[in-house]
Image 1 (cartoon, protein in one colour):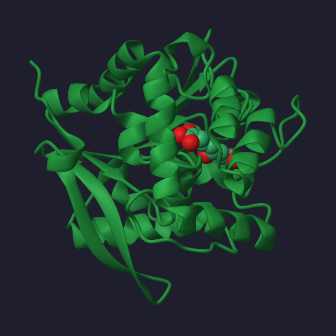
Image 2 (spheres, protein in one colour; image 1 turned 180 degrees about the vertical axis):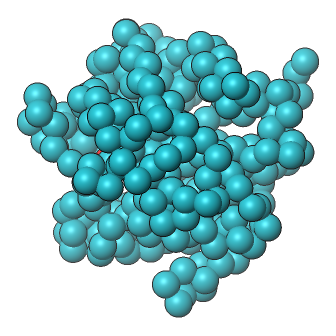
Length: 286
Ligand SMILES: O=C(O)/C=C/C(=O)/C=C/C=C(\O)C(=O)O
């Protein structure tokens, strides 16, 4: 069944108070199920819930879930912010204000990269509000045992924030995915347009990094506190957040499992969308 969910039709704004300041956040609200899945995007320039997860919404909505794509403070149509502390925890506080305002008692969270780090921060702070967790290409900051950090992709991401050109965007996107043949000029242009629409976000990200280069703390020591069923998904060729972070997550979270896609970069939800969607649905339903 095709539901033809569009960004424009599902677009909503919400006013919250974040650390004592009024902040307007944007989100997309799709479907009407009794259970809600919140999807949290990654930290790249021009990222948004819609840009990250547009291949993953419809199967969940069709299966009867309400899907909320939250644009974190500093991305897309949400207000801009300079973050000098833990961005994972800042996003978690923003999400708490949103779920309170929407009167959502319990949510499942699917987080990509920074979104995964933020999902873990939210779960540690509000364990009673979380059903199941899906962590993809993220879940905690911290060093890799095998890959020099910052990883190649993160260096390109930071370079793109500093110099937002189409050349730098193409350089970053070419290490984002395993199979670059799917990267069309249309996709590059849409992402560039998203980025350049909000130069304040780009500038504030750079200021945040200057104030605190470690925006995503290492949650490893606290992972055993997470009791939720957790599905960890990684791409074997992830050049942004190395795959051994996934091993660290399942070593720490007791009720967890890890699936590694071969021929897959940092965007498993996009590169392997069909299998990803089936796996997530099966995990949520059983
Ligand atoms: O530095 C980290 O640990 C996290 C990096 C990211 O969150 C990178 C994400 C990139 C995307 O998924 C994107 O769509 O921009």
